[in-house]
Length: 259
Ligand SMILES: [Zn+2]
Image (cartoon, rainbow, N blue to C red; front, side, top):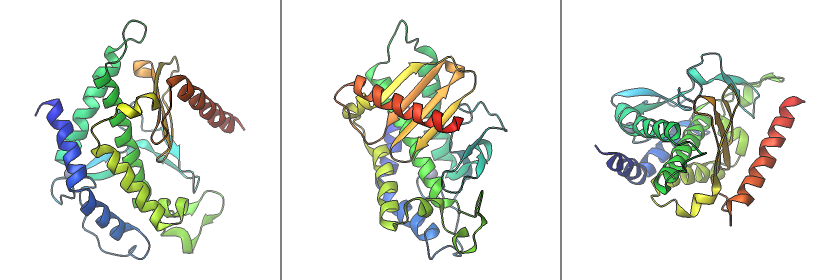
């Protein structure tokens, strides 16, 4: 399969299987169905065979470091990136998403921002890749139970609710956010989105990541000296405006971390 065929396949799966997979996901994991016996299936195409573990954040991004964790906003519990996976079939995991990963790694390692800029095709595919990460984090929030809060401890009547339900409360909001995230993956044309992506160089030594589902993502990857910020929804007249807003968000997140 050529790279273009891989991307086409990814869009087709999102378009053709998306409705079925989403409905099954909501049925299996949202309120009222928590004790349901479910058949583990691929969260991208719905297949029930050859299920593998797809990392929500790719291993090369967090440098395969088993100690790196992130904190889930709603319960403040930390979770290891290495253990944060979703069920996906080997076709979706290896043939599609991993092919996109390899392309991204090659692209960002080859382009030296001092001498050469990204082609529009590269640019679109970086956007596409960041969109798949948002989609996977949304799937994770839907399929992960709240369990307990760092300070409040185990809260029996909340324990079985999903992280997504604790964040947004309205089932309709959760569903439309997840559907929208999937729809982005099925969309070929990213030209209107071009100003919403910012790529720069970084000198940090360890990888950094934060993300607000459906809104923005920030990724700093020291291995390739690159930093990415992307707004999933917002469109900008020019990239200066996007840069300014991204800097404000980055600053406020790091200020919070210092407190
Ligand atoms: Zn699949």
